[in-house]
Image (cartoon, rainbow, N blue to C red; front, side, top):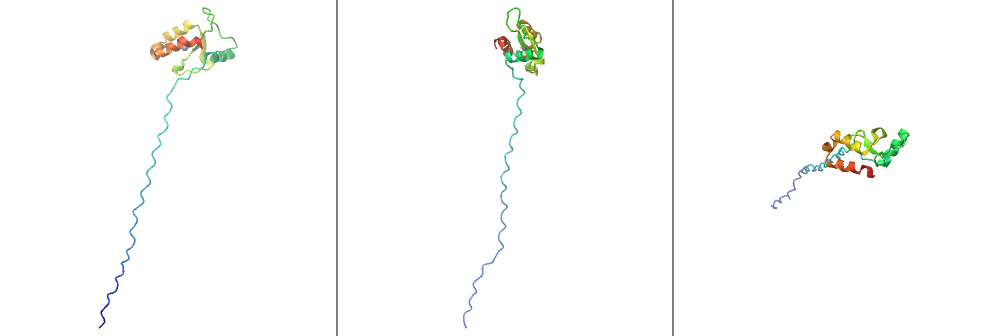
Length: 126
Ligand SMILES: [Zn+2]
């Protein structure tokens, strides 16, 4: 009697393992919103330019300071530091002493600090 040959065991076919879900791509870093620029006072225009604009609007020459014979100060009716601009409507000629006194009476120096005093001193040099 011929020996019984064991059939070669067939490999059991298993259904393929389900693939693990693909890792999600990392969420993109939220780009930080650009910071809004800090509110800055309107940059000061050079006095000669402001005087010229004022002269064109008012059709008369920029007045001189009778005490010094030099151009009067370029005074901003509403200071740039308080949100004023450089338009001729916001500009007025003032003798230097009056200009400084105006700021003093508005207590601008104490509100703004020493930096303004330096700027005021330099006003007639530009
Ligand atoms: Zn001023």
